Image (cartoon, rainbow, N blue to C red; front, side, top):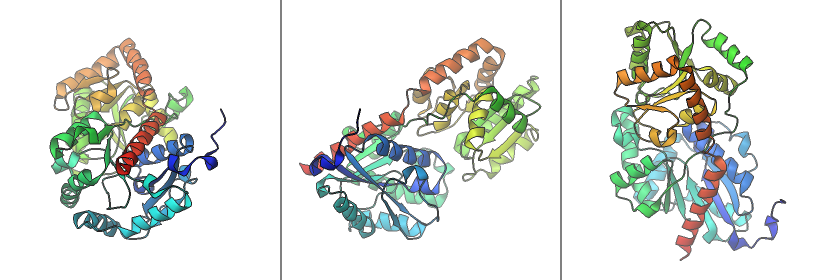
Length: 405
């Protein structure tokens, strides 16, 4: 089907969306993935109705991802803390935030869209006071549910900022039903203000060829089969439970090692010392960030993927592991049960014996593991970025209509 001739569409039928893509510029974790993939899907599938521009603060010196090069870019040039604190101050004291408002006005004019059809989308927990309808994506409320897993400074900022931003936003996107429940319970928001829109999974996540699986196996664990964890190294990921499970498995005669891929987060140093305490010095490997090709093959070749997290707003690694054909054991905490569905073994993050038994079931029963692999791939295929983008456009239209009444 040919693309619509958007140049001839009436201005009032289009939306001019300015999206803060700061996470995609400065990070490599889940917020980054959300931002770049959502923006990419909007550019690919919704040019007939959405003019998209990207905004970011340039404090890190990084450029926007190449995938977003087609979108006009409006960088800010201020220090990281100046950006965060001034954006918060604009909401606290209710003054127009000129650095963003000026860019909104410039883009609206260049896009030939009426001002009433302009939208500002904040994709992380930072929403300045802008002269347009606003959409705020909230990924999690870990700082409220598990405050000890955040630094004191970050916790203080978020405790002040997030409830204010949530009240001031015209609409909120929650990436899971669990995150929505937290928002309603902790901040007393009206149900109709919070829209649950699941994130997607990149289509590149699929079982790697056997040759690639053999390559990474020889590179990262040549002498033993392995269990795998993926994600930023933070205490809430509950690596400690995985270490204890591995110690019990080794004591029971299983030869497995534990590979952990992901960059350093905060407050992880004490957790990093636990393998030595448990006598696992040579059985746990911290790989840091790995290449995308290696990650696909690591998922595919793992005997079992572990996600015993205490709290997840969504849970990208669970879906990635499933898409690559790894049998998954995850916790019953926060969003993970709704993301994993019936395609994983689900245990309490506080039940060490349950975690060990689930892993043993997968290792000892190949047919059961194969069934989990099939279920996981089918489950992961239902989480799509084109669906996420289409539902997000519906939210944009909703807030534009609210302001237009």
